[in-house]
Image (tube, rainbow over all chains, first blue to last red; front, side, top):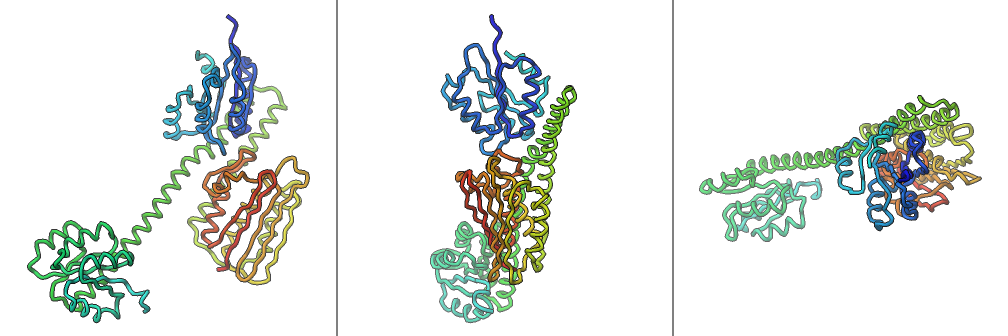
Length: 132
Length: 363
């Protein structure tokens, strides 16, 4: 069986955080394509327009607190997309939030795989990539 | 003392003579309202919800005073309730007092001293209760802001720190000097962001905890200081900064609040520029006329989406992902203006620019 291809989408209003995530992901040597968005609405437009190809998985790492469209808004909009648009995308939420309401809220979205604490590290990423 | 300044007292009694006697005796001291049945009394209360004290006779044909107060309390909890009665009704009075429906009772036949001291005591009770209610409201508002604040602190203060931590971690394993320098540049921005946030908090607490210090304001002097920050060689870079001041009369206000307002508006105007605009411009005009200062801050920057224009003064609200903002600046502006009885209006077109118009009356 051919190895699954991996793409990444990073959504964070902080350019530095996008940069860090990109770097860490690139260092794994496993990513085919990495894209980052500082505005969630642009990421949503991209996800809406781009289906994930057969044999490919796209990991989306989204920050919670962002201006205009925050991480929760993004996930809600994502969950409203038709099944075939969502297929192949796996969502992770990444935040500096230690607010309990936020953490509980993350649980309530079926499409969020897991909550990750900032900053993203290579250890966290390898654990995440080992998940089926 | 005019009628409006006197405290409002309502007396309810089925005996017309008692009512007229009461009014004649106390109309100089209080703003007296009289009702000879409970329905009429309720109508008066609906028209005068600021009634301070209600005195009612116990024995009336339609209702007892105790029953009346029980009804009144539901609709008008604020006025202080006092029952006028003879000894024979003592049981019902005790019960009513114990149930909290009556502040005190006045024995029939009453003396002038009884009534006056009862009303004055009742008024004091009313005032301390309402002051307490206002304080509670303020406290609730402070708690709500604190909640918002604590929530935001995790993001706005921890956020930049965690970014820097992440970058340090990466840089440690990186041999490429150019990439390390690039990261240093971004770490620098994170630190500036955090510092801006801390300064906004400082502004916020100055505004909220400090008393206003009203002084004669010289706008030229304030603007000169701001020019040092934003003018040639300052933070503004290649943005044209036009200033016009027209102050020919004295203006009294709080210097620090004015600086917070001007500084935030200008810093936004300079910050939210369009990168591809060749002639970046910010203009400031201040005109003092007939005791009103009108301040215009205009830019030809990125503008504000119509959908967000009403939210920009909310705490921690940010209408754009471009540039670093704390979401605190315009909230502080609005807060400062509230304290100075001033007003702010925005007109903005996306990708064309924004104009903020501030008006502040002299103190």
